[in-house]
Length: 598
Ligand code: BGC
Ligand code: ZN
Image (cartoon, rainbow, N blue to C red; front, side, top):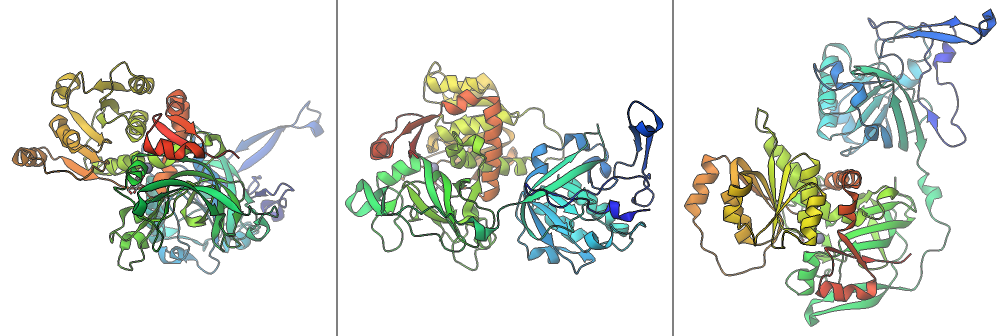
């Protein structure tokens, strides 16, 4: 048998794609006990037939293939249910050549991030594919590694031989990954790829309910960092910026120097658009916000969409021309803050964090800015016109993510949930879209009339609108029933806690608004406490958002643009930077957006 043809057959094509697929051939190596491969020509031109036609018989776990949840979990999803999105996109190849059993500890050094697609190159690639017999001592993951990847919620993990696990714990390794929704890719030939960042395409056959399927898998390197620095000259001179000067109680449009070229791990951003929200308006009324240490001015703007202009030599994935949304919060430096130390500064425990455009760090309401690559989230071009909504959407995305965690504590199924949104501002309306898209029966309660523009927008998303003028909060559940989940986005304590009266047993009240300081309000606390305890209710607050919430928000926004694009677009009302101080003083549309002409 010519074993060579099993090995990678073809070099990287001129367009940069590297095929990682092992060719399927008659009697090729397969996992012991699985069906073998038969490939025969039932008709052949050489035999005088009008065409050559082959018959192929093989196990679905042959060669380069994916495993579906139903492979190890009864009744779970088949390979036909994998989303294309999970299998196509940025990926990282990591090389662990000296380990036969790869553990969580071996992976720890790679700082694996949530949502990553990982391809693990072991010495299998050069050892296993050029022999005919099945190689028994192939490199694989152990249970600790599988648990870690499941916890990090990686989207894909690929390995370069016929199973991700081995021996008695092999099934458990599979179950852990499959239960976490990780796409397992096995049988890759990674002998031609180095560690680094790539785009991957993995398209398995759509076998209905299939427990696996052969796949064609290829990667293409993202440009090498060194060659990435733009030759085109970086902008020079000054740029416009909107600043607040708390000492003088002024908001000003000023000229500032364009930032210097990016440092090694930084990028230079050109701002595309910046959204304005209640927080910005509070900063402009000097109730909130702090300039950077030593400065008297704070550059505003935290809801940004930007394009990368230039990158430092050590950035890994960012490229000039990429569209990105910067996250808002930056970690504190306190060594005891576990949250910031692990990249979850939205849960900062010391309170010493900074927030761009809000607390102790300049924002993005200026033409150019510098940012560390690690704080940027890439956005697909198709979302360019709406991606300025990503940051406010992360607030609702994080809230719902926490809610889903709380809700999952039940060991039983709950019929369709009923949700209530308090407030029809941008965060409330985006929250309504999140609820609605997730199949929650959604009601929005706000001040505006039931025949107003916001009510129309709510109905355009398939949700119901209730005006406070028609139905006061304490009469609300008579009209729509008890509520399983309330998302508060008004910042008015009477409204927020007034909603407790509408809450069903096991209900959850999510608070996201930040009220101004006021005189104390007196309430019937013992009634609240009795209800909360006797009905297993949960009240939680949520602020800021983590990287995974940004990625989630981007996916949701894409979904909204399919479900109710008109509603999304009608949130936005654009102004130029000259009009920014004006719009900061008094809002115009639902979500005012400062747009920077290219
Ligand atoms: C921002 C959050 C921030 C919060 C408090 C909000 O407007 O969206 O990112 O954490 O204000 O400063
Ligand atoms: Zn905001």
